[in-house]
Image (cartoon, rainbow, N blue to C red; front, side):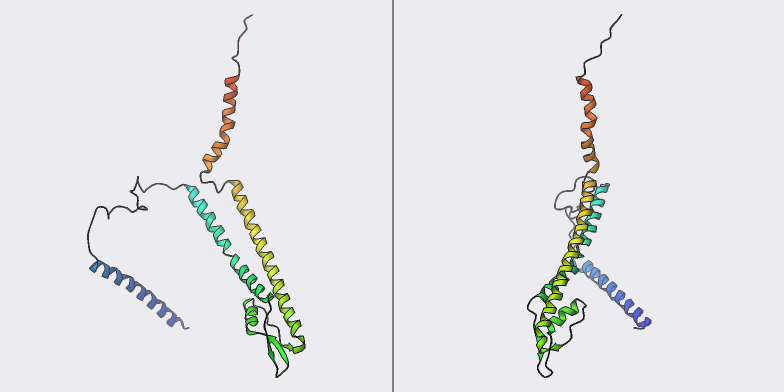
Length: 209
């Protein structure tokens, strides 16, 4: 595509998009009813009356927990390629159909099997004589078994790495919503112990000579 055509197409796209939004807003402003009401002008907050001011500082733990959720959520999405390879390999392990060519006396993988190879970006086995049909089928099934095992091992290794990272964050307390309060509760008994011991100690008496 030439640069001028690309720029023109892009400009046309933004022009149509902007006009579409502007026209819809204009039509709504002209035809929608205007019925002001004090209840309509209140801030909507989950159907409950608002309490306090909306201008307050969020706890920093909210951003940390949200960031950790996004990180692990995105990493879990990487399971899909392994699942796709594993499912394709399991299909190859079944009784795969072969296509016979009686005119030339050869047999080759069926179109469905060839599609499985294409999904795995692997070369499709070439046609072999009819006498070697069983050998070809065993070769396809063996390839599927190897790919399924490899995909499962890789998936488990990746999942183990995710679990190690998750337990490391859990051990550090990064998943605690109020980390400071939790640490204070853990330190509270140690701080109260000396005071309790001092209360149980007998008062000191002075002996005059």
